[in-house]
Amino acid sequence: MKRFLFSILFCFSVLTPVLHAAAYDIKEMTPAVQNALSGRQGRYDELKLLKAQGTVGENNQGYVEALSGDGSAVAAENADRRVIYSAIVEQNGLGGQGLAQVQKVFAEVQRDKASSGESIQLPSGEWTKKQ
Image 1 (tube, rainbow, N blue to C red):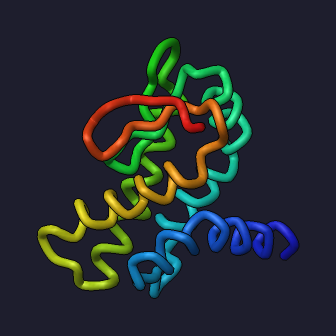
Image 2: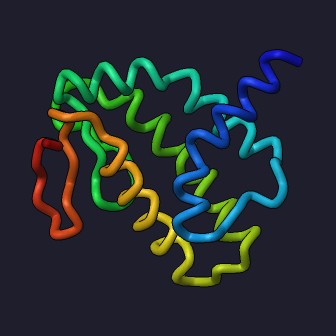
Image 3: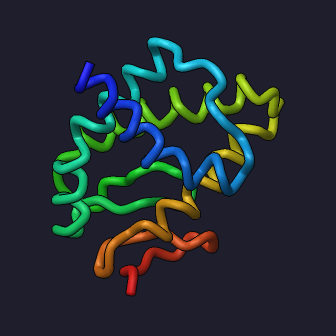
């Protein structure tokens, strides 16, 4: 039960900025969404370290991107993000342009949440270090 509550709190800490900014929510916590959130939670520290090392950055499409080195954590993170984004789009009836809209909002949130010195991609496509 304690693990479940922690997972829910993690879910809200990850998704609340996105959902608040775009006024969308996950209406049904499906097993796929739960697995995606659990996966993200499990690799959070690893991604934080990779970002601090400069080998991974947040791109302007709402995904992490390998800038150098091994991209295995990147592929798993992006797969989980796709599950979450798709659930938001489907459950909120956002239609054909919904995915791009959710990705854009999430990219903005991730840029804002990035720590100083981490690599982020601006909407223009330019990569920079967060100040």
